[in-house]
Image (tube, rainbow over all chains, first blue to last red; front, top):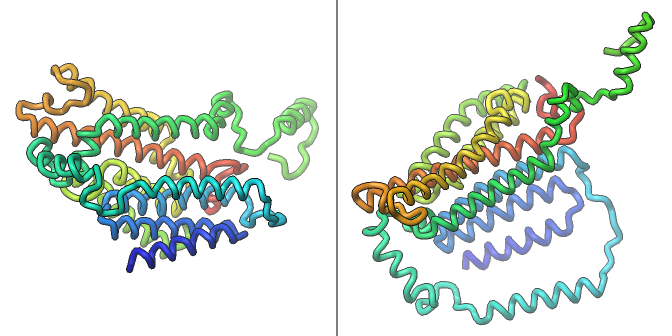
Length: 207
Length: 148
């Protein structure tokens, strides 16, 4: 019952985000979406996933979205909303294919799902003796799937390098002795220097 | 927001607890939910709160972007070197059993260091991303510094 309610709220929030023009409200709603998703994971007993979703989805990514909003405008540009048949058909077909794909999957919590017949019992029975930690999720993530977690950490690293390359390029100017963040035009400075050399008085208000 | 006293005082008293909670999640991951990834995000959230209250310039003085870049690499390298160490000790890459005399002890050490590596990288990445976004596209001092 409670998961149906949560799913309903999730759908409503998603539709709300789609319809909103106010980007600040949309960012807030997407944070709410993450919080609802985290509650849903919590109901499904996936505590670690819920934790991550709450911290990353509802916390940091909302902050990053707000920081982005501070740079751009708060309102989405008004556009004519018209239904284009081509893309709509494509989206519907993809969605139908995805739903068709889930039909073969075992239902949530089925005892005879393949993962519950050999893998999960092995982790549950052997990992306390073999690895140790009472939290089996940690043993799976850090020990049994240590390669995967290494890969994930590398992905985070690579993402940061990408963002640094795209957005962190201003340091080059600063290292060259020129701080572009001051917002001063180079030509203006040259003009002032030239005037000074000519012994002219500086116009008022200039640095 | 530096001159908003309620925010400043309540933020100041909250930040240490947020960071402590981050460390708790980091080192308690073996026993409860959490681990390096979540801990890193929580710790970075403390820094983000500090930046929102005291401004980007002051935060950058404490967590300088250069140092953060070094920490980003350090976490991944720590993770990788645990794997290399287990190879040096005669096991496979990231096989923690060989790290100590007792295999279970070795597993404990391995998981501890590996999770620490994840935590360091995630913390540094989150702080760096926030600084980059907050200081982006603004001429003159960042908007967060308007009262500095």
